[in-house]
Length: 338
Image (cartoon, rainbow, N blue to C red; front, side, top):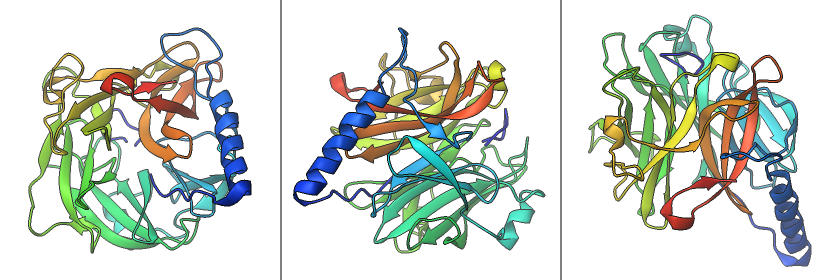
């Protein structure tokens, strides 16, 4: 993450019985209230979160024990936990020791943009290792029985690019289709966002399809598109992506856009029918008031609906990057943050 050109879920177990139902109802009511915007705007303010919330590129999941696990860029992939999706506390890193291959892509052993999910009884994390201004990058893959900090086992490189590549292997996101097919989207600047098919048995690229599909691009202008997230809702595949300038504090122009398609590999079109392969994308969230440059997003399903999880820069706190969370509605066939 964290660069203008090289920057840079999950399982929910429903409680059963009367006590479980009451708990979920209370959570839904509390979080819906917390997510209400506090001022008039074309876009909603982020919902209330407290504690250790200075993050970049957050990814979050509700674990099988009900705990919220959040991972973010830097450290050994910084970990935070919450019991109510409001108060977050730091809980270490995914990795206590950097895997040996990281140093080939980052002299500082600084991983970026994790993506956590739960598949086949275990937690999965895709993440990137790179250095500022470079497409010499790699996407790594790790597994954990609990998803907790310090329990992750690295499984090595999934996909890599070199300094001569015309795309960049960072900002990964796993999407599992209804037919069981696994897809990994990724990319930042250069020729845009890409997608490859994965083998569910290994978590790595599928030997029967080595194609690198192109799903979004900005062929003119800054080429600033990155951080793809793919979900399927109501028969459509939706591609969320971050556009424009990240990581410049209060000067950031990051924004979240979306397009939809009838196939996971696209073409993704925005509300006006413009393809995301040619600068298309409809805005979901952009700067408003003190909330500057929202992006680095992920989409999480929870007991009360879908959540947009992202970072923004606080214009009233020296441009500090902070956690943003909003609910998403899907009325009219398009996502709306609220």
